[in-house]
Image (cartoon, rainbow, N blue to C red; front, side, top):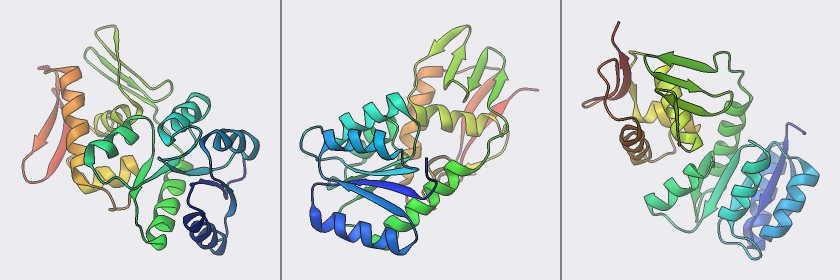
Amino acid sequence: MEKNSILVIDDDRNILAIIEMYLRKAGYEVTCGERGDEALQLFRKVQPALVVLDVMLPGLDGWEVLGKMRAESDVPVIMLTAKGDTLDRIQGLDLGADDYIVKPFDAKELLARVKAVLRRSSQPENEKSVEFEGLSISLDNYAVIMDGKQIEMPPKEIELLFFLASREGKVFTREQLLEQVWGFDFFGDSRTVDVHVKRIREKLGEREAWQLKTVWGVGYKFEAKK
């Protein structure tokens, strides 16, 4: 895998040309494709450090491509779409996308997001698991175990829960969580965090020993009894 290699998939040749130009000027090696089935072939051949992937593609759509990529690799993926609906954005993040940008977009913003996601993915992570009474969260195998049973969660829910739990007692704003967990560098929608917290709470329920708490007017924290 080349650390500066990026795969861009979009069926709009004008958008492809603009993205390729900006990325190449920034020093990245760029490979382009226009179809979903072609995307998987190029992905396996190039082994890029990051993928920029359109949702609406011929052959296979972006969601299908993302799912197949995630079955093989945890390489960072930024989704491109003409849809701006928050739930559509959440779907992409739940499927394992690292970021999400809505068309039309400023190429400079896309470049900033590419840099942010690559920077985050290259940072070494020391602590990979954390445990509390009846709860274990691991990024080694992306598993959440509660009372001996695995709780099904998509990757971003696990990453958000781990981030807060591994910093027990510390309060984070929604903007900080977007930057740290999603790597948006403040480009995200704060409702993304709210929806993920809501889903985590629905799956874990409430415990006296620990809680994922809302700090009104500020953000969220994971709190455990000493």
